[in-house]
Amino acid sequence: MTRVDSALNLTRDADLRRRATKVIPGGMWGHMNVARLPPGYPQYFSQARDCRVWDVDGNEYVDMMCSFGPIILGHADPDAENAAAQQRSRGDTMTGPAECQVELAELLVDTLPHADWALFAKNGTDATTSCVTIARATTQRRKILVAKGSYHGAVPWCSPSLAGVTAEDRAHILTFEYNDVESLDRAAREAGSDLAAVLVTAFRHDARRDQEMPSAAFALAARRVCDNAEAALILDDVRAGFRIDMRGSWEPLGVRPDLSAWSKAIANGYPLAAITGNDRFREAAQQVYLTGSFWCEASPMAAAIATINKLKATNAIAVMEASGRRLREGLAEQARRHGLSLKQTGPVQMPQILFEDDRDFALGNQFVLETLRRGAYMHPWHNMFLSTAHGFKEIDRVLEATDGALKVVARSMGR
Image (cartoon, rainbow, N blue to C red; front, side):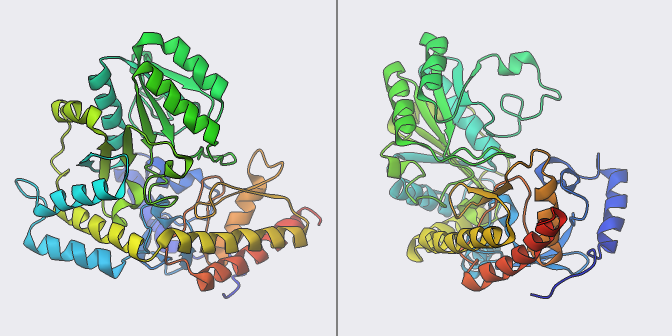
């Protein structure tokens, strides 16, 4: 990897940003707005392939964000792309669904032990909101328990921003601490006979903090609370789905949800979400009004079938775990050598990398800008994602970038 000794050339990117501010509020919205990141990140990209992306100024990076999770086989994976293209040539957004919708539902039910049925939507917010609605329709109750700080989407009942949100939007949301059984039990007692569901992420992946895997005791407690109250256990597998376990992220813990929300990696970049559930919630899933003009778009479903089958056939999770361990171990050795303290948390295939005693992310910001200049696109406070395209060669390229970046950080600290 060639060392870059000057700031990246982002001339075209800057021009696009100037144009965007005139026609797009703030120039960009949401989690992909790089104004949230330290100055120096490109906003606009021109192409992507395998685990690499190119910005509009021609700078190339190893992509450690995988489009914030949707890319799991690598950008432009030929099998997913061919499946989508073949379906699109026959019909895509039609007056009704294509045959592949039934095939995908069958595949999900066959793949996920907890699932007796599947519905489809477009993004993770659709899926989590649908799960909550189905749970309330089944139980005829209102209260939903969620962990403090957990992200479940971007609509008023769960948005991390309070802009435009009323107290009434959150009137029936109660919170507990992730992995804290006593806190969960306390919230359940507060909900009482009005408890409709416990909604929990596959692991604690809140931004700007260390990640936390669920304990078996916590997962079992969540199942117990729901069983005792005849409420729904909803697993938000939007971010982690198919990266931890192909059967669902809590299957290794021996805990099966009643409802699950899926999106991100399900179709390798094509817009798709799924809601899966057991037979207790089938009738409500049929009764509630869940719809969208694009929700039956066929090409993403064809891509999802190809993606899931390829993940199974290639033992993809083991591949990502091996690359993730190589990255984690390499970074640990580099940090030791440079006299720095790194915190690496979460599953290795979804790495979170923070610095000790870095409350304002000054060290993290410096680190990611230096890796960016050296050809690796990383994030200072959000978990990252690996795909099966991140082989050892690509991980070693990233480690070359991080070694140079850590050297600069250490020098700035007088190490």
